[in-house]
Image (cartoon, rainbow, N blue to C red; front, side):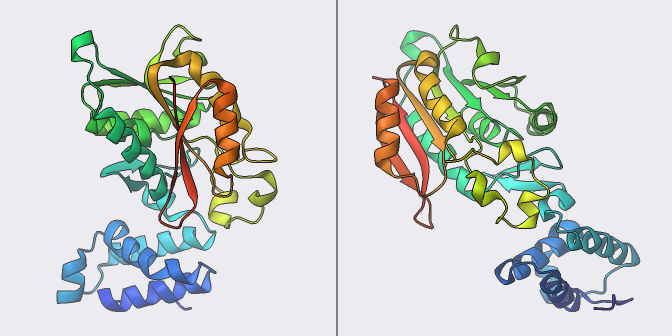
Length: 296
């Protein structure tokens, strides 16, 4: 489609939807992406767009062209805009960081629900949380915002991802989070530190399924944050096995996982590690999403 030289806001919305369709973007995503491009990319207020239908400025037209040129290459819109909303926080993202998904908010909610029942005042200490595979830091920062009396350590093996996490920590003003580089529990003290909660969103996509994912995922997001090996449980299994040594008695492990792995598998893995499986929470689509276990 030929790029127009002038556009009013509502015509721009229609133009972007049709252009995205032409790029092969899934039909269901086109309208919501188009609205995000106008609202967040061109800073057009949604109410004013429908009420006033003002013409786009030359600067907005140039910016629209830049966004669509990048989107044509199937670069994720979140990378182009530079951020994504997660649990009420504006999380900065770009190449090298996995894009936080809405379903991951379930893990945050389940952690907060249990943390709200913890009473440590009589022990004279704060809640301690370890977030593994933290990526952009979304989970750790959402917990920090809602648990100001918690001390949070977050680790990741990727220096690139941690660069984004630090940017987000500064942007959120989170003083109760520390980001450390290294493999899983290693940076947290190798058994010397124990926590009330351990959270993790490890790579869990089966290797054979990677090639069937949308280009936005498989061609742009870091493979190290996606591939969970042959059965999708490579890192998840390690986390479950090693978590008890880092949990306080009565502490919780919460791990995001892919749908399709039944509760019997997780129950067995938890039992072998000396944990008691408490729940396997499903997302709105009905898929198993968050595995939760407790150390007796």
